[in-house]
Image (cartoon, rainbow over all chains, first blue to last red; front, side, top):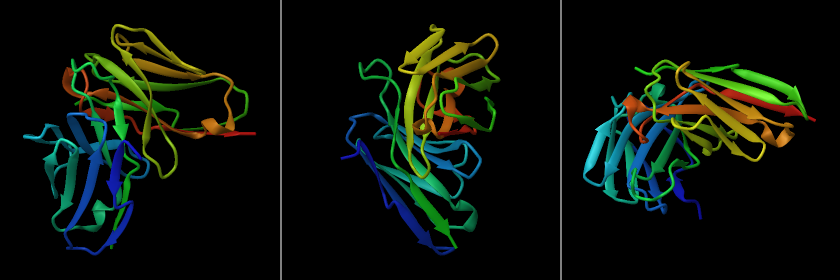
Length: 116
Length: 114
């Protein structure tokens, strides 16, 4: 099984619909992130969470919300999807400094979202 | 805000060539820099993490260097193979943090043909 699992892998939804993307991890990492990737662009941070009670906005949080249900679960919601939210969405995890775990990120395989 | 730039945007080479991919960043107050590989339609795989105290980091045919003072990092790929075809991204942490939130470059799309 993958260390970071994202569901669904692909989704087509209509404008105005609410949609949730889910992420779960078995790495035991405290830190979780949601990034968005658009064609020809690098990844941009949407939201991040450094522990279960910590939620922070990233570069492009407008139109998105998140929930950290447990250390291992971090979901991203689009309350009312719009076409310019069509993108590839990635969940990622990393260990906190000083925990003894190796540095570096672990990414999920991504969710390809199309809003029509 | 940190700006991360990668040059070239795309590169196509025959198998066996040695390659250099470049990454530059505007704020040199970083603790580390990370190189990732992304295969089409897939997630990112971490290749190398260089701490600011290091000048180089090696993994197999990959060698990454970091020059904080000039705001540059290079990823050297020796004896390239078709399996190296992918997009390579570099990333640095936000705001002087050790890890966590990352700023990404747009990547270099590498094609190695037989």
